[in-house]
Amino acid sequence: MESHKHQQQSCDRLLRVRDVADRISVSERQVWKLIRAGILEVVKIGRSTRVRASDLRSLVDYGTEVPPPPTSISGSRKAN
Image (cartoon, rainbow, N blue to C red; front, side, top):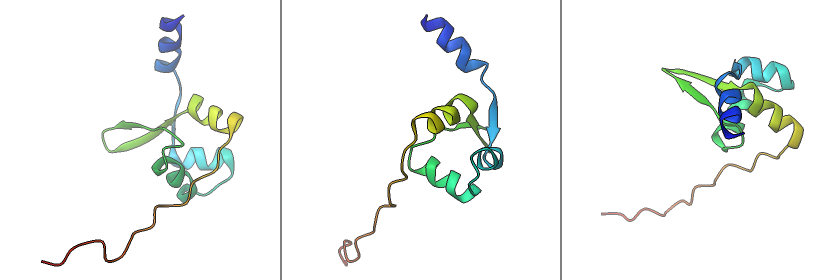
């Protein structure tokens, strides 16, 4: 069964960020937020970023909220 899962992932269609945005009716910027938050995994091929169609299906099926970006704490650096 494990080899079947691996085989299925290796044959999965890879989507561009703009294609992901079109499929779920959000902006490319929102897709990048999902990626940076670790909610949507990517595959890097050289300088290209792709999303597995199965990962997008999982996101749509199970859903999740994008956590707010981390806030920087001003004054946390010590002056030399």
